Length: 228
Image (cartoon, rainbow, N blue to C red; front, side, top):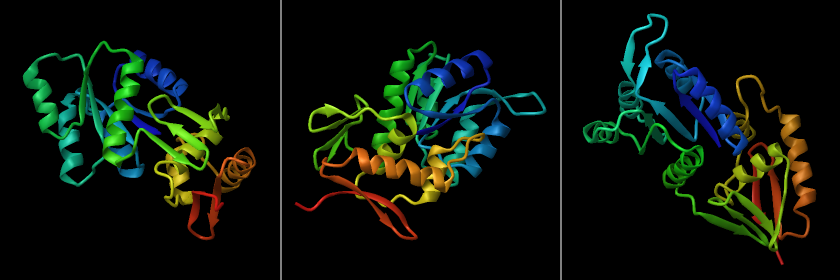
């Protein structure tokens, strides 16, 4: 799951990058509104974490993150936005939600709660179920656990990311371009040959699970239940 973290506090930015990364998220950071606008125009995200009090950029003036949120909604960008702020006033919470925010979390907060809220707003926005099964393969989004026939399937990070994307939801054809957009970061592009290697290894590990990854030439990959 790829997130854009819009936060100008360097310490909090670094802490959240590490903590969310350890929980399986891929995080891009933007420390002002100019960088955030650029990122949103050139990259698709599963969710945005938005601080409200931000610098505009080179000019150094402060601005309200709600302006960015309103601009996103005005141009039809439906990306879920979770507002992060030290503000606690009810009227400010209402303003954030009325501007198009999907949820609101006041600082200080627990990273585990933040991660849970992110998963919740993404599930709602994408219409994803909390758990899905394909054959004997089962994925629990809340617990972030993958099982085959009741036994946990432990995968390296990249293979896990590919499998989760195929299961979101299962039956959806995911193109190589979509994989690259979701699973790359600014310094680490997911190349086609690397993706093919991950898919090949996943196929071997899913053998006997009743789930298989099908290649649709020119379109991408799809996970589906094997015929009996």
